[in-house]
Each structure stands twice: as C-alpha cells, then as structure tokens.
Image (cartoon, rainbow, N blue to C red; front, top):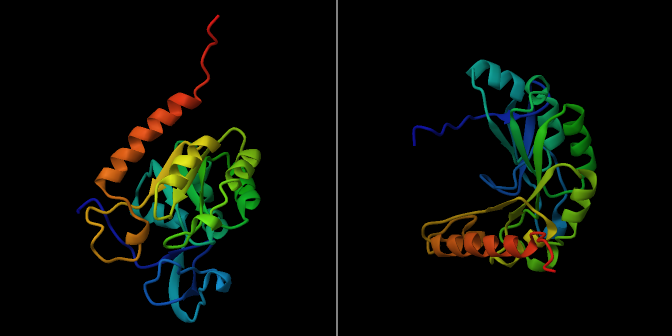
Length: 219
C-alpha cells in the first residue's frame, strides 16, 4: 500500500537513544518503559538500543499535517505527549490514546493542559485478554476524569461480548483487531474478528444504541 510508511525509530519527549524492552524480538509488548508484567506471565529479557525522536520534530521534518493521531505505546504515553507540544494545542488534530494502566489522571491532565481534542481508549493489552481481567468499570473512572470528552474501548478478548457490553458504559468508539482469514497464524488472530463478526458487531451496536437513547415519554 503506497499510503502506509514505516519508520525505524521510537517516539519520546526528546531526541536520544534508549533501551527498548520486550519479552521477545518483535513482540507487541515492546516498550521504552521497563515494566513489570510478570503477573501476566510476561518478563522483559530482550533489550536493544533504539533511536528516539519527538513527534514535533518528526511532523516538522516530514512536513505532514495529521488530522488524526493514534498513540498506542505500551505505557510510554506521557513521554510521547511531552514531545508533542507545538501541535497538540491545535485542537484540529484528534488524538486517540490507548491506555491500559493507571496513568489515566496524568495523561488527562497533560492533554487538558494543551487544550487537546482527544479520546481515551481503555484496553487490557493481552492476546487474548481473559474476560475476568477486563473490568469495564474502569470506563466509569475514565468518564469521571474526562466528563466532557469521548471515551472508547479497545477489545483484545476472543469474543464480542466485551465490545457490546462497553456500549452500556457510554463508549463512542470500539476498536477490535480484524482478519480476513482467522485460520491464519499471527500474534493477534486469537482476539481478531472476521467479516461476519464485524457486521454482527455493527448491526447489534446500532440496536443497543437505539435502546439506550433517551426518548420522550408517551402520555
């Protein structure tokens, strides 16, 4: 696809070189943050030195004007946002930020300080994520600290029940991995949906939305 480009560097608060930590080479859990996830059976033994740039520098160098920016950086959100000061104040850029730890308050303060237009996506970043670890009540906490902003849910479970249940918590965006062929192998196949499941999710979401809409009472 000529509309997609990949770049071999990380994003942070300043230009530097840092260690990238991962449980294995090429892992989706890789992060510049040396986290502890042994309670999820993840230990970060693999390390490599990577170049780090800021979003401000990258946008200026590439002469791009993004309309939407998605940040999914495995716990390093605060540092990435601190390297995005120049353009974050331009609320024409819509920021979708995925968070699965307890940094909700910190990230929210940083985004509000810069008058950013954003949505926080709640996620439990396991592949697949067990239903007993989801705790959709976290969405209520996100709503409490971002009362005038949209909230979303990124579903890594193996079914659609969490996605559909999140609608009852007021989410405006549902994100779920997609595969044309779930018989293929891949790191996220276990939590992906196919075309039939996508149609089911869309149609049932509309029905649930209609059920939740406030209607005038019939006298």
